[in-house]
Length: 279
Image (cartoon, rainbow, N blue to C red; front, side, top):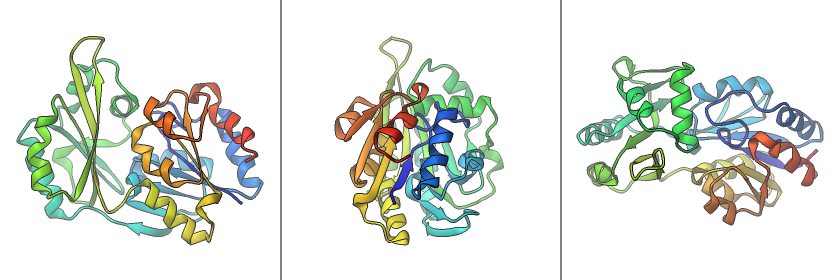
C-alpha cells in the first residue's frame, strides 16, 4: 500500500478551479481500488477544498499542515493548530500598517480585505497562487469581507504587497515564530511586481502532515508519493519517499523532485500514476 499526497492548485486542478481532469479522477479511483490511500495536501483551508471532497479521498492535509483529518466522513482530526488570537491580531495590525492586503483562513471560512479584488485586478497575469485568489473572488468561493469576520480560529494569513520591506514590522512582531513563504511575480512583462505568499506557523508544514498520516496508518515514509507544483509544496516534496513535480510547476521544485510529469492540463497525474504503477 502506498500513501499518495496531492496538492490541489496547479497539481490536481488548474489554479483556482475545483474540477480535476477526468483522467485524474479516474486515476484516483483506480489507485484506491488497488489498495492505496489518496490524500489532498494543500494550503487551502477545509472550506475552500470542500468542493473537491466529492471525488472521495482518504483524508486531507489542509492549511499548509495546520489542520489534518482522515476518515470516510473526514471526521477524525489528527492535528489542529490555529494561530492564537493575539498572534492573529498582531499579524493583521502590523501588516495593515504597511498597506499589505490580507486574507485570513479558518476551518469554515475565509475573509479578505475589501479592496483585495481591486488590487488583484491591477496586477496582470501571475503565478498559481495569485491566479487562485483572483478566480476564487470571481467565482465566489466563499471569501467574505474582512468586516464580517466572526472570530473563528485562524490557521494562516495569505498576503499580497509590492515590496518585501512592507513585511518587516510583522516579522519582528511575530518573534520569528512564523515562516513568511513569499514569491515575487512580474506583472505584464514590465518591471512592476507583485509579492504574494502566506504566513505559516513554524510548528507545522505539509511535510509534518505527511508524517502524522503515516504514523496513523503505520506506513513508512518510503511508501509515500507526493505531487506538487510550487515552493509551498517544498516540505512535502522533501518528506515523501518519492516526489513528483508537475511540468507547469516551479523550476526550483522540479530540480528538487525525483520526477517531473506532464502538466495538469496534459493529464499529468494520470500518466504519472501509471508510470509509478499506482494504478
